[in-house]
Length: 314
Image 1 (tube, helix red, strand yellow):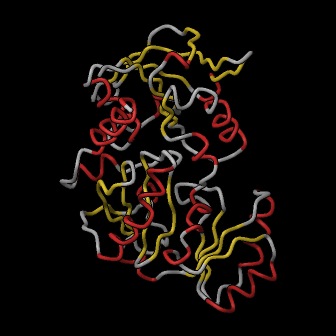
Image 2 (cartoon, one colour):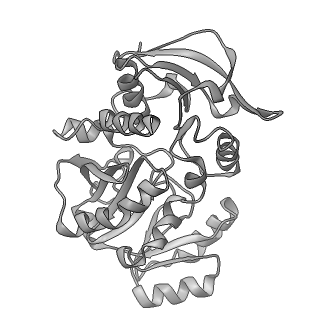
């Protein structure tokens, strides 16, 4: 079934075609005969009951340095599209939230992936709190007294911004570290929101596993091993990807959260698991498609479009 697909994303000229999951999704859609339209979040408009965007036709190819061609800009009624992929990266701020409100006006007749209301209501580090038995000891607060109490109980902790992404602003605070006060002062200057504090899980030295679920079902996984001297496993800060399989605990995690993801219309999600603990549920702009396939796993872009087509068929 040929679809018209509008992709709301970051500047396409800046993406890494060997690592960008949105690009993999665009390539797969194009291979199925779908029509692609491209626009950025600031091109989105609500006016007199209509949701429109200044779009360009898009064609893509796996050629580094020459990976896309755009047509002329024109205003397009997004309710005429079959699918909108909301794929811009966080920050998950009021601009991001506003975009979900606007796109909610056309969903589900135009299928927005992921469901905009569910994206808005399931920020990565908060959604996981609905599965308390799966997560490590966690504190979300602005109160220094509660942070000190949590640190006294767990000693070795991770402190990070509640709405950060990509490992930015993630700090490990060891029991003898005297910088917690300064760190919290810095957080207060840069963020209005509470911080999230978790007990440090030493198994992260063996890797932080990214597990991808498509429409609530396991689709693939990679392990991301932190570089020496680094507490973060994100690949853009030196994390090393490697092939992996699921443990029984990880299968249990997927089976537990999968039905809820499917019910919420979260077709493409990436969860992070360290040791026995679920630490994040990524719903805004998950990544990992290229890495899973590179290590011999499934072609997740195909699985995602299969799921989208099933939803469109009803």
